[in-house]
Image (cartoon, rainbow, N blue to C red; front, side):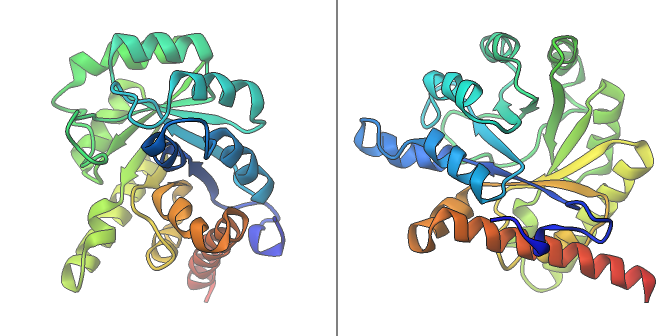
Amino acid sequence: MTGEADIGLDGKRSIRLGVNIDHVATVRNARGGLHPDPVRAAILAAHAGADGITAHLREDRRHISDRDIDRLMAEVNLPINLEMAATDEMLAIATAHKPASACIVPEKRMELTTEGGLDVAGSYDMLKPYVDSLRLSGISVSLFIDPDLRQIEASKKIGADKVELHTGSYVQAMGEDFDKELARLRAGAALCGTLNLEVHAGHGLNYDTVVRVAEIPEFTEFNIGHFLIGEAVFVGLEETISEMRRLMDLGRRLSYYSKTS
């Protein structure tokens, strides 16, 4: 449940938590049938203090289904963030449902999970019509990119409302590489602040890695799924989300006190 740990020093939540429910659908689809229900997970996440729900409707429908999207829009009283590839099929689904936001992600049929960010700079002409169409439909557009300054600048130029910086390399790094990847996230987030581009983070974040990213003041939202759903097997979704929120807010408080000390 929400509590003092969720409240920032300004009296408001300082970082939003979007819970990705894809992996609940993965477990369901392993056996077929209806259980476990990802929409039920989204409703539980809302009660536990999530600020939004993320779902990736893939071309091959390996986890989230079209019916899941229909039900999420109808039954969940939180902003829905639809992760989608830049295809005409996904554009039609997004503009028909009008989620609060759509995050365009790269998608490879054989990958286990998203392996990296979009090449916005190299795919500008292809991506531009999708960004424009989504925004014309009243959908806030995010682009999932690596923390690369060139990609951030291209995302601003293309008209995205926000970007989500891929944290996978940071999460997997060790030693000197860890500091290097954290520095890349800091530099990327700082550039977003300069460009007035809202910046989110996601991919692989867990209890051990989230605090350092939450210390970066420009980040306004984390989208986390696999770790939360996996940990929930042992302690329950409410406990997992509450602990993640506590650590996110701890990181933001550390950022605040480092500036004022």
